[in-house]
Structure formats: structure tokens, C-alpha cells
Image 1 (spheres, helix red, strand yellow):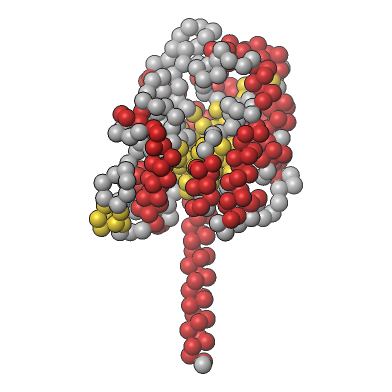
Image 2: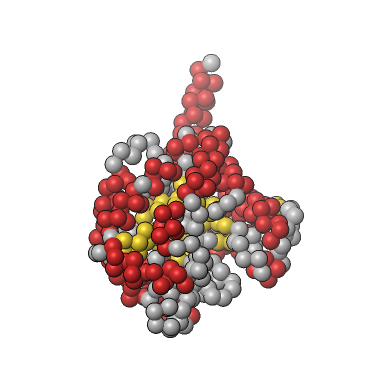
Length: 376
């Protein structure tokens, strides 16, 4: 089970002070947050992609490469890489390069994006979001798994005898998660390829995401990648914790009430009762997070959103210290009763080992067939 952070890279006014960090301050802060994630023992840091204000992360691979140079263990990912408005060729190139620089500590989450104006900025139509996601990923998958690609599709110019460079490290592509909050077509796509499915369940009630994840699991088994309970699932989450519950609620309420996404909407109490958001003590946070497997089954990756809604860096780092203190309890709780046949989240080393095992098995089968032919 992997635990980590994801950031949407918002630049938001602190409602308690009225101050807004600069782009430079937020970019520098995200590096400190990622390094802190490794220091407290987290496994993953994921950074989103946006091309509009009030967000700063237009080039997550650049930032992740910088973070890779200052960390040793942390798995680096995205949340999300826009498969609809990015050229699949550029995605293939950028993430293979990052994979080499980070010695394999790289995967990525693909998503459609839901900011309408961004699509025409990159020459696309949001009404074609699903077909774009399906076609572009089909091309990306081929670019990483085939050395020479001939391609003709609906949304980009053809490719003739094209080779994406650099090639993936050890000839094994970065593992792909497909992120969605509402689209069964994306869950189907993830299942078809045997990829991971990340349901960012931080805004809507659990029942909605339970149906989406159950569908993905069923289709994963349908395509022969394993049993439904062995499908590769990731979830989102949010928390604000203090040693005393009342202090957490009092301190976080103004940030919640003025957050750019859910502010001025449901009350803090209603939101925490219907979504993964926990505002309370560390023990309450652990108890609620451990209930996620009751709804969604055993899964592989849990990412938390912490640096949002104008929370200052000092407060975010304090939150991470508290998370680090309860991380052993989270790990133990999720490990308790976990079936032995539920896989861990794929990493570069595990994918390389699986590929080597597959090649050796194929070689043994060929040798056995040749032996039978000779004897007969």
C-alpha cells in the first residue's frame, strides 16, 4: 500500500491574513512539501497540470525532475497529465526522459481535464474529450511499447516510421493510472490495458465512486488481467488534523469556507460526513481513512491533498509532521487482513522483474516445444 500527497497547485489567498503567495513562493513551497513527504516516510508525490490561473503547474515534468534530484526514494507522479490537450508524442518523450533522470521513480496519471477554455488554447474541442482521451492514449501506449510506429488517427497528423526518444528506461514504460471522477469510459480504458484507475473521490459522495470502481474492477477481470479484487486502484483524500479535534475545526473552517472549489457551498460538517475529508484529531483521521477499504475494497495507492485553499507552507509542514506520526498506524491498519493475492502498486523494479519473468517463461516454452519436435 502506497501513501502519498497530491497537489493541484492552486494559488489561493489565505483568508485568515488576506495575503496571497506569489507564483515563485508557491513553486518553491511545492519542492519543500515534496522533500518533507520523503522525510516523513511517504511513498508518492504527485503534481497536477493546469494552464490557467489561479494554478502554477503548467509543466509538472520540469518540477518533478527538480524534485527527483533532491530525493532518493520518493515515487514521482502526476495528478493529472492532460491526455486530451497534450500531444501523445511529447508525453512519451517527456516522461521517458524523466524516468531516466529519476532512475525509474516515475509513473503518471492521465486525465481529460475539465477546464473548458484550455481545450481551444491547444487546438482541441472539449466536446471531444472522451474520444481524444481514448485515441491519444492508444498512440501513447504504442509509442512506449513499439520501437517503430506508423500511425493515423482523427486528432493529430500521421506518423510514419516514427521512434519516440529516449526509449523508456530498461524498455519498460512508466506505469499509467487513469484518473476520473465521473466517466465510465475512462474506467473501461484503464481496465482494457490493465492499467491503474485513480478515483479522485474528494468532492462527491462515496456511493458514486464505489459504482465507478466496481465497474473498473469487473472490466479488469473481463479483460483477463486478474481477479476483480486484484485490480489496481487509487483514491484521493483530504485532512486537517490537530491534537485536539476542536482546534482542527476552528482553525480549518475559514479555509474550507473560502476554498475556490467547495467554498460557499456545503457546510464543513456536511462535507466531512459525505466525503473523505477529515477535520479532527489524528486518531479520527486514522479511523476514517481505514474505513475506505470497507467501501472500495483493498487498494494500492492513497494520496492526500494538503496544500490547498490558501494554507500557508508552515501549516502544511506541520500537517505533514502529524501525518508522519500516524503513518505507521495507517500502514498497519491497511495491512491487517489484506489478502495475499492483492498486488502492491506497480513500481519500475516490479515491472522490470515481471517483464523478465515473462520473457524467461516464454523462452522455456519455446525450448520445450523444440525438444518435443526433436524427440519426435
